[in-house]
Image 1 (cartoon, one colour):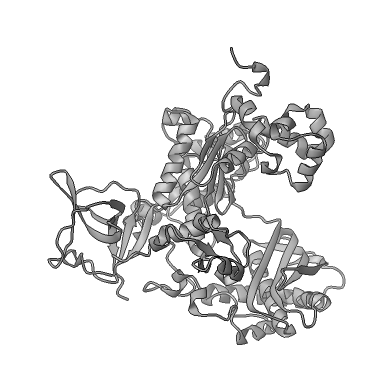
Image 2: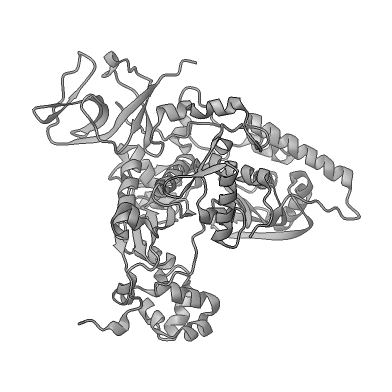
Length: 440
Length: 195
């Protein structure tokens, strides 16, 4: 054997065949797939927010980065095409991608809107071919049916698969066998590992660890001492021993629920900014109730034109899912953080310490009849929303919104899909099939 | 190992899973679904359910539903537990309009017709054609194709081994792609909504 076998971390290629699939410039790729005239052009999405949410590879090549402000990007590149985000269509594409992967294996983790992990264990027998070939089949099928490209990493753990999919992008296909790690890892910088933040990287550099290979070459005890539990987990993951399991269940429980919204033009009108915040709170509570949850902790924040955010938080005596009950508390918090004469561009609310809404415990001083009337009101609000759309019944505070639209702008700030409705569609409900915008 | 199985609850959980995913859970999914510590507990449950005739195993050992689980589920109201009524069983073999029109939901797109090149085929301006991406075009199919940079909808045909795109309108002559032909998809249905 010519190779130094001492370097081998594993004797088999895929002790656990895990792949990571990552869409290339997802939002803009969807737009380009549905609107062929955008192909090959610098495109960004995020027009409604005034920032670059996603930039096409053509735009990236010309120096447009995320999250540049739009006017900045536009000044830099006048021919840049700015589109409002069409999250509805992106979500349909996302679901389709997961569904195509599930045609191959049920073990799929929906890691984010455009990223998935999948475990291919045992599929070799079904397809009578190796794991990389199966991964390639999945890639080709996604590209064929969705009309956009994905980058795929095939390796032996989630951490390695993710590094591999990033290794070559766009339209990449990178296979890292566990028994070839000694050739691959020396080329990988520490910052490319999901889990090593800038601080960890700085610490490791201090200790003389220059590459991922250096890290896995140290003893396990050393990793534990320096970085604790995470350190050991990543040490194993990077050596091709899968530690992190795939979370294959669709997400139904939440650690926190947040709602934020940008509005233009920015405002320093107290009532208007408060109304924006209250509207976010209403949306957050609607979501909370939809999943039959209650929250105990509330955090609110504002953001100014310089993208500085500030906020405050409060913990309730008793968790709640009632907008009426929390309204006064939000108001109180808002009074604390609102700054006169500062233009705000965004408000947000985060609900945390969430628990299932199945038992109610009243305290001695609670006004029980009032709390029960809140429950009744919530029920009515949710039923009215079901029938006539969200926010048809709302708190008086958000009446201030009625005078303004979310964004004062021309019609171009709404996605095409919401402007050009098909017969029978409404502004609120559309067919769950993407519309391919070509003239035939 | 579960010592007692609440049949109604178990059935309701499986029905919900089936309704959401259009398939039954794998053994490892059963494990998480019912919070079992081991796969053998899941296998125990599966055996019990087979014994009761609520599910079956196919030739590969995967579990498949019987009518007790796959019966058409009411959209509103509480989840149906227990045994379906005969009327529901009769509906087992029915298709929704979605399933009837769309065979490959992941690859199907809507194209709104704007021209009149397929008018003799009865495809009018404003119709919504359902297009399947990534499907092999066969002579006689209606395809959405990009020819020399232009998108068009035409009949797909072959003449002396060469591809020909033919309009269903006498005004337009056949197209023989010169430099480039890209089949974007095959039209599988046409939808025209009147009201």
